[in-house]
Length: 452
Ligand code: NAD
View 1 (spheres, rainbow, N blue to C red):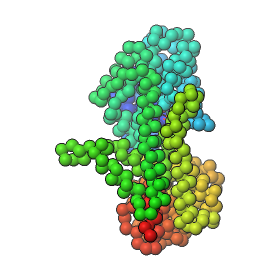
View 2: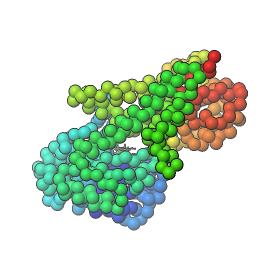
View 3: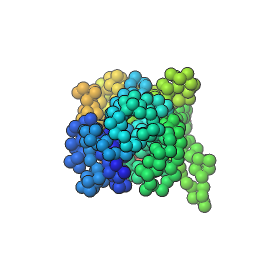
View 4: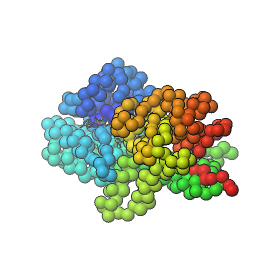
């Protein structure tokens, strides 16, 4: 099938390259010329394991290209996928990029009588596909949805850092569509996948994505609240409490004597809070939608609040350990919202750094992938280091914000000796299982004070 994908970001580029490797002929459209040039030269503008090799293979086979020219890309194309950003604007979803693309596709439909299916892949609040997208397509094309073109919503569940694998081996594909033809086109698009393909309405498809992210965020905020309670209780280790909770057979079923640990449990641990380009904005969007529609969502409102308060609580804990932050040099280990990605958008490390600066600390950051832009917002006040020794030398404390696996391998005895005072606040409990010789003061999250 000939497919046009709008957006060459995490979702658009991965979708485009993976669909090409399934045998489709794909053009990925973007408005960013440097991004398009880079991609056509065989380089990916985002870090995603396996993506660059797959891109080069499909460029060489002539099945994939990136372009700025939407009109040329749409010519002869059977399916368009909208995979542009839907960012947070003051706590609400910004649908302007989606609307712009819908207008572009609508203008194409006006001059081309061939049947076309338009698929929304971006995360959009329930009702957007049948509302804004459909209305924009109809007004720009002068045609009616269902007659000459189909409208669909196909949410994406890929995780950054595992994007290619998640796209190519999905657990299920959710196909929300209006009319049978759009459903058949989506079936043909994903014919190579053996997982269940579930046909629903576009609005149900939109809801599945929000319900999914709301559940993950709720697990994280629940675990953080348990940690906060444990941190204030002598003789309690919150991680131990949650690990034992996980062993309940309703959470970890037993099959043939073997425990089958569901992936959701990795979200049922406390830390510095959730972040990234999806959970914070999606939780804001769904709660804003509830408020606007007069629908009660008190649980999700509190999930957001617990998460917002968590980094400041971690910094408060550090201030107590250090007897104040004023003038102290603190190294934040990890800027990315999780290991394996260069994505620091909405990472909890940002409010963490801000709270440290507000408390009067001097701040250094270490991250293996983050670009200089990640610390640009703080002017010259935060220096970015790639080398752990230079990051930690002379520091009064380190706060581990991202569980990069290499941190486990560092020569910690040597590094701690180079610190001005070896206080390590482990915001992810990633270093909990190693022995810490005195005088290192190792502080995991979730643990209360020692019993008197
Ligand atoms: P992104 O910011 O990485 O990429 C968006 C791309 O769209 C950019 O390259 C931008 O230049 C381009 N763009 C903007 N306007 C355009 C236009 N008019 N025409 C063509 N291209 C245009 O965004 P992303 O992370 O890929 O997210 C895209 C959508 O998918 C969002 O709704 C997001 O919530 C959702 N999503 C993201 C993830 C994820 O892990 N990143 C996972 C699932 C769903």
